[in-house]
Length: 164
View 1 (cartoon, rainbow, N blue to C red):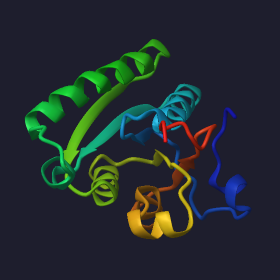
View 2: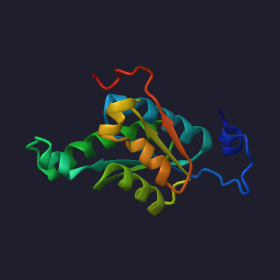
View 3: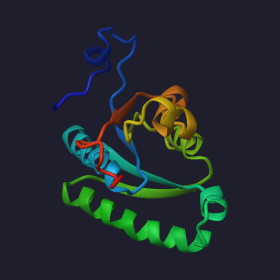
């Protein structure tokens, strides 16, 4: 998969083929998002693209979700995990950096893709369906609908990759 083509994926030739220079990896840093992380690193290496890793702190989950963790503590913990992902990417010869955004995950990922000029977003999904999806929503669905660039949604190899 040395060449990524939107035409190959959709069966339609786009009016203009943009090279993929920046890949935005949206990750929640769970085991379920590991497959998307691996895929983004592989794509960036094959395409010679820059990898921008984005994690979103959802304050309402920290404050209202029963967590007693402060936002600054959560940010510090996530930054340590993101540094590891950056190291993995750089070990593969990729230019990589990370951002931590605060807000709604779906909207923040789409906004980060726009602000950073991403040519492709890679996001994982837990593969929820039915009532669970209706109640909890889907970050990946939101990103697909609102991002201004193509989105690659990666399912985990196992539906139980997040420990559920």
